[in-house]
Length: 172
Image 1 (tube, rainbow, N blue to C red):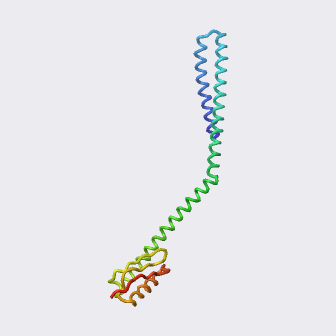
Image 2: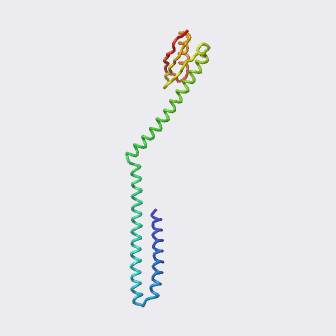
Image 3: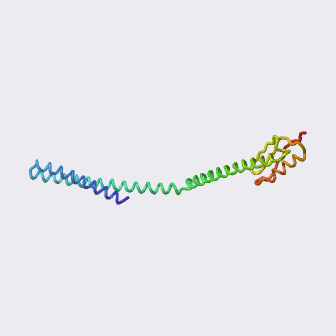
């Protein structure tokens, strides 16, 4: 970055020198010797001031660039930003966990429903299955107490089922 600034400074000086030289040539062509000397002095003074201003501007730009870099680094190292980044990571992690749990509940519900549907006595019945975090809830009707108990046992055999809330009612 400093090399770019130095190159820019040199280009500015060179452009200024050409402009000043052109002005000197024009001014000198129309002047007497004393006027030429005075013009050269004025031009030299103007060139020096221009060079000084250019150097000062380049230094100021370099200082501002360094301050901006330092401020950016300090900003990303600040506790508030680190805390925000940590909170965002946790939110993404929690969102992923929630999606995984939801997909798992859906798989458990489908597996329990399919297993109950394969039972000849329970299959034709309207048995609703719901699951949340491994807890399965059965609702609807069963033709007998044995069938109600069998539905619960079928649900317990499905992978991922931790508990069964059997709310089936016995209807003849």
